[in-house]
Length: 167
Image 1 (cartoon, rainbow, N blue to C red):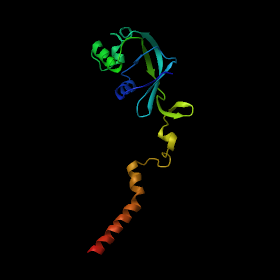
Image 2 (image 1 turned 90 degrees about the vertical axis):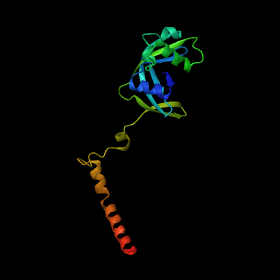
Image 3 (image 1 turned 180 degrees about the vertical axis):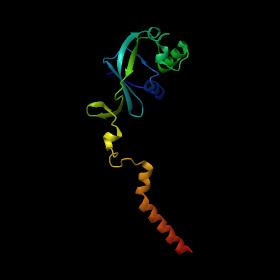
Image 4 (image 1 turned 180 degrees about the horizontal axis):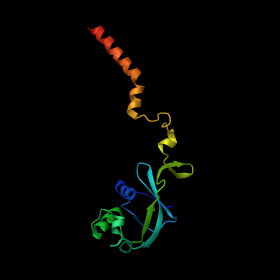
């Protein structure tokens, strides 16, 4: 599975669906899945629909540039963006057209004795359990007020005693 470390802007393009083609220098990597990692140990995964290898002008063209660099208004702007990333634009580039997974596209990145491991992010109810059945029909504000009744009463008592001592 190709896994690519991306800058925040590019990661945001991918997660919002604005970017649907990833362009990388070099020959294509094996695998039919793709993973995008950011610096905050987050990752989204998807399925590779098509791969295309060629020179930069062959894979970055009028039909694809908006899917590669969504903020580019022209093909020249997209080429300038790619040239900022790579010292040389000679050689082979690979365009990976992808679609993000709909189910569990968020994962955490962990490293252990096996290497880098991608694990799905658990939902809070899976990880901590759900208390909906216990507090049926009550809002968080109501629970907070009920839970702090004794504490509020004790605070008022201390304030009253403090006023008596200082008067």
